[in-house]
Amino acid sequence: MDLKMKMNSRVVPFMAMIFQQLAQVGLAVAAKVAMSTGMTTFTFTFYSSAFSTLILVPLSFFLHRSALPPLWPTFLYGFFLLGLMGFLMQVLGFLGLQYSSPLLSTAILQLIPGFTFIIAVLLRMENFEYKSLSTVAKSVGILVSIIGALVATLYKGPQVFGISPLNYSILTTPSAWVIGGLLMMISSLIASLFIISQAFVLKKYPTELILMLFYSCCVTILCAAFSLIIEKDLNSWSLSPRSRLMALIYSGLFGNVFQVSISSWCVRKRGPLFVVMFHPIGIVIAMAASIFMGETIHVGSLVGSIIIVVGLYSVIWGKAKERGKEEKSFRSNNNNNMPLLQDKADDP
Image 1 (cartoon, one colour):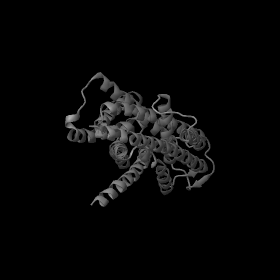
Image 2 (cartoon, one colour):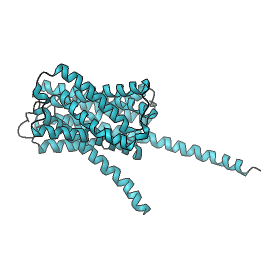
Image 3 (tube, one colour):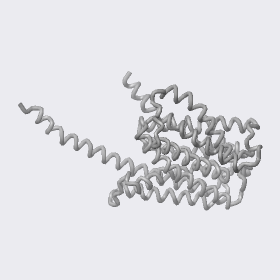
Image 4 (cartoon, one colour):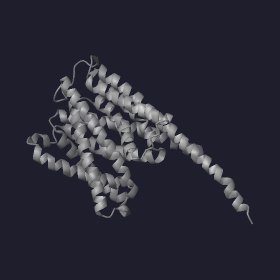
């Protein structure tokens, strides 16, 4: 029985993260499909967040009815800040996707761990020992990842897969590809700020579903306000054709609710390093999805994705080395303290 429980504790998180990466790539494809029918980034984000809110309201109150936060200004400011960053992150991310492709957007999202490390160092949440091998590995990995993102963005190169490009993007010129990549980089940077801010909020209020409920509500309200001001074409609000509606349902269910819940559960079970290790799988899935959909894949995307993965795993290795050193130091301190405790216990 114990062996079976141990196997489940190891296998289930692996399977959960693979499904999470599938859902993330599926969200990019769904957004691309919806926006190819005339829906804009604002209306897509509004419907997606609104649908997530409708799912999270009964789910959050059912599971965490007694854990509702007091509506103090501190909580409200924290939730609004997360909502504002989430709004910018999603709108810029979907806009960048509209200009580029699911493969490029998935590849550039791998910059999030590197950006998060840089911000954590600046805020002194991470130690930066320039003589340490782990710090050098993380720093070099971040630099390599950024170079890979720039290669994928600035160099399109000859076609590798696909017969003809899909008519998804509003522009198919190289300049549009560069704009899409840069928007995705900005979105990744905001996502890193979001992760850091989320960590501060969760320290005071460790209930992910309630946090996501307030987050989705803020994003929905902000998107509705901007859409009513900016969007003039009423067709962008329509839920037809059916492909648009199905894409919105998928994004609402798997975009926020499923992905965040799975990631939070895996972080709690296996730690953040375990979750980050699965990010490159998203590139492989995105590439397979792009080939299946007949989208054109260029040399720049392939080379840039490989460089980003190499940089990411350098960051992961450095973080694992650092974590191993901390655990070894912790065990050493405990062992050194044990005889003292034993001596005190033996004293008459």
